[in-house]
Length: 322
Image (cartoon, helix red, strand yellow):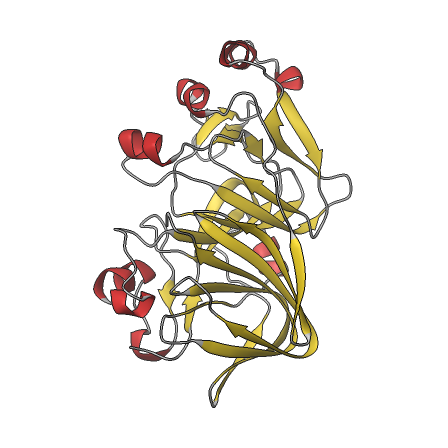
């Protein structure tokens, strides 16, 4: 067992829509000027993060989950259930939709994909595609097949600090000039509805679309999920509760000097991403420096902790279905 945090070295994914802000804004060493995704806390086989400290240094997170489940309070499940990403959309992502657990397991042999976004930064007049206007599945299919995108797609303006919850079955696309921290189920299944007819320079081809799967899994009609966002004082800090679902709970902790005490309530382990500032994590008599771009997990044995300094963190915990 370990009473120390698990710091992580992310994996990076090059994307047709990616840019270089993961380097310029967070200081990461990225593989190219078209790096779209930092898989910061990931045990997914398509991009596992690596433990960078302590007795498990050098081990992939998926390997730790498989071989030392006691670190996670002997949590159930074949796979580590959550995936934390930072996405840099230099251009818009494809219009897409994700399946729920039932459909994903039947057709893809992995988890479904409910996710959420915290907007780190956004260019002026930025927007997301979030939902659609079709009233029936027949209308949805017709509008997709006849490419009536202006009639089908719902556009939502966004700015830094916004939060959007994206249940499986929600048609969506992160817009140009937007950077988000994404908390999601650990799945890499995406069904593309529309990709703006762009061509991948590497292949000279348009990327594959998944029209029938998209029609199958999209929620019709679209309905915005109801969020009960709460803000509480935690020591000298402010804790915002964005969402608490069966898949995950997501919070933001803001600390402008002073200290904030944390204590796990339900989940056997907790995920943290430092989005801004610097400070330290204190566990008993040990201190760990923190700065923008650091990601870590507090395992089962760590019951209480403190943050000190000037910090903004996004925190997540697995839900009951995780």
